[in-house]
Every structure is written in C-alpha cells, then in structure tokens.
Image (cartoon, rainbow, N blue to C red; front, top):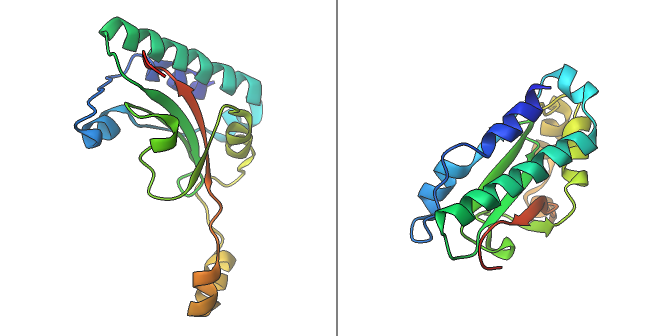
Length: 160
C-alpha cells in the first residue's frame, strides 16, 4: 500500500502558490506517483480515490492557513506514457491548467484511477504500436485526433 502513503505525503510536501510564476508552481507542486504490481493488484479504485480526496482536503486546509486569497486547483491525471499518476496544485481555475494539449476537467476521479490500476504494463508502448505509427502517411498523421487527457480537479483555493 505504498501508493496510498505517497498520495498522503503529497499533502505535506512543499507548496508554492505564485500566480506570477507558474513555472515555479509547476516545478514545486507536481508529483509523480508509481505503483508496484502488488499495489496495482491489491488496491481498489475507491481506496485510491479516497486517498486523493483526503489529500485535496488537506491541501485546501493548508492554502486556507496560508491566507492565499485566490483561486487554486488540485488536479490528478494518469500519465500513460510514464505509467504514473501525477498530481499538482496551481493558482489557476480548472479550465486553465498548464497542459499543452487538450484535456477534460472532471469531478469524477474514478476513470483516471481505473485506467492507472488497470495498466498491466505501465510506461510500456508495444513495438507494434510504434511500427503502425511509422507506417502512416503524413496526411493520415495530421488527420489523427488525440483523445483529450482526463483530469480530475478539486477546487482548493479561497475563491472559486
């Protein structure tokens, strides 16, 4: 159950809310969480969701104690390429998270956690998928649509 411990520890890690310097926020507040095969097979989606909800509540409390008056969002996503759950806190609303690609903000964490726990080869991309990608024509590549990233969001700032 190491993953649950790591999720809980995020609540006590350094936290920077600096609207004028989003890079410092990202570098300080973003965490990558992996899980051993034993954790993936023994943990339930509910246990992991509960751990993140507890962490979001603890971060909300810390932000209130800091007296930060603005908007802040705690968010979680499954980084499939790295085989990790990632989480961060930023002084931004859910519709302005610092992703370069498309994402869908949701208040339902279950699908994100289900995808992570069901990933039987985290961070592994089969050669066949790479071969298929190389075989596509340039025209076909530009027509491919990349599915938006599912991101769980929780408002943790003083103003929403």
